[in-house]
Amino acid sequence: MSEPRWLTSEQMRAWRGYLGLVRVLDDRLSRDLQERSGLSMADYEILVRLSEAPERRLRMTELAQAAMVSKSRLSHQLTRMELRALVRREGCPSDGRGTFAVLTQQGYAVLAAAAPGHVASVHEHLLDRLTPEQVSTLGDLSEAVLVHLPPPSGPRCPPGRAGREAVAVADERA
Image 1 (spheres, rainbow, N blue to C red):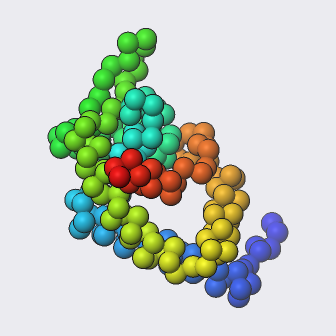
Image 2 (image 1 turned 90 degrees about the horizontal axis):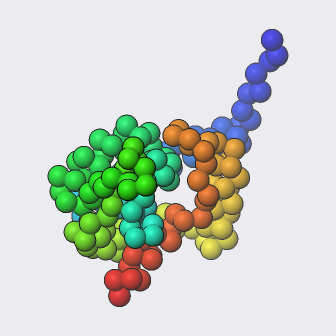
């Protein structure tokens, strides 16, 4: 058995800083989103993914992969969202076993109302704290690590949509 590769002090600083950043930032963004719009981060992610899809609909399997959640977790989440009329499910005419998740008009309106506040929160708590070069580096670092880590629910989805979704929704609203 080989000796473990222990972290250097600089690596430990980076690792612990990353863990703290992810935990605190996720908590802050989630609280802000909930307080401003009544949406959870999971709600928002699903609404965004559906808003970006052709005809604002995705097969459940595709949506689970895009949102990086299991099909079971997605199904439970959609059930809660259907009760609020944010989404609906429709059968797939070409495949009797397939199901689509569809963004409703109400769901789109809720997303459009929530997006500006969420984007402001992302700016306030992350982007405005960094230089443009650091933002670019953060994107590069994230992509370099994510390319080697498959999401929990299947094959990796292409990077690059995060960040544009709320801007696209806000732009469409204007």
